[in-house]
Image (cartoon, rainbow, N blue to C red; front, top):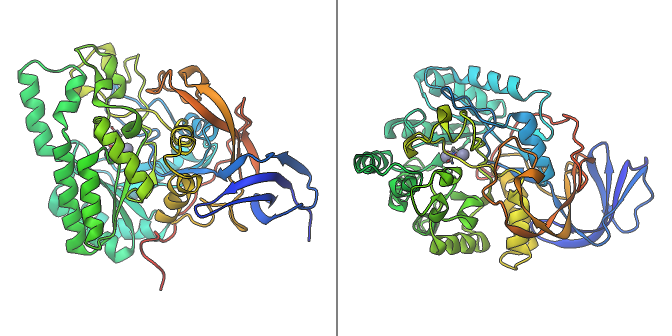
Length: 469
Ligand code: URP
Ligand code: ZN
Ligand code: ZN
């Protein structure tokens, strides 16, 4: 047997099912042996009894998506993937977004241009379908699914992204026929528009009113509706960025009927509430404007419970990077604008894993195995990247995170994105990645970023909810 390139020794290796004490042997970027006292390798890393988890798979992040001027995303593939690596994430699945009137094939080609040679971690693409023409439904989407783009996002809200219910049904039917995974942003656009107009007429335009304009009932109704369509078509789907209690109940209801409904949640629904958008008319809360908005403590608890009991399959960042200052972000044109015009989304690629490890695992709300399931194994399975990604097993890519118990107070200066704030500023965590390895190479050593633009495109295979028979 030829020599190993690397051995990670004395690891407490965590998978979605087990924790084992072992050495992990790596050759040519892949794990080739897991055992005791493996032979010496060219490179050695002593994990000294520390937890070692699979590199994170962040299945929901936005990088370099186009916007109408002056809005611009702060992170491109280089800064976004750098930030991911430093927070323990080695695979990202951002979106190739179709603009209305654009061909989906063209959108995908454009995104490859944005990513190729510019990513520090491996990446796949979800599609965003905003213009499901006959050509898209009949030809482009089936072709792309066959070529490794096996998931697509559907928006039920946002004027420039949403499609109507008939189009949604058509798309779900394509997903079923070609074994793709639809992901749905479920909020009732009509309720939101009606409430927004009413708030504007009353002069209530400060960031905090964003939360009032998108109440949980709008999310609950749209979730119920999309579950109904999934049942009609007999297709699995995943509801993205679930924010609170009423929606968690909808997911459980759907599962109790035997429907293949998966759910994702994100750090903002565990650590922020609507109060973070402001208690008065200050503009500071624009930092935390995202959709659906953060809710309340009761919803935070419902989300924690749902993570622990398996209601949620995936924990993603929904990194949507807009600067707070400067005219290309939360102050469009350099102004404090009405909440309707504040770009939606918050940064989170780098903080996703440390937040859940510290506040979830170390505070015993979830087990280490559940952490791995939610942050790596399930996203890899759901989107057809398993077992290459998302686990510690012979044959898998040697994407690993070594965890260190270390009190860390989050501040934006320590993060590696190009955004000028983090919503978690000042929060004290009990752990941070001491090392991140991408295919056996150190990309973060606990102090410094060490990536070299080695990220590769990953075509996605069959989503796990379409079992091969
Ligand atoms: O507010 C959010 N979540 N912005 C990002 C886009 C999306 O809908 O996920
Ligand atoms: Zn969304
Ligand atoms: Zn998103």
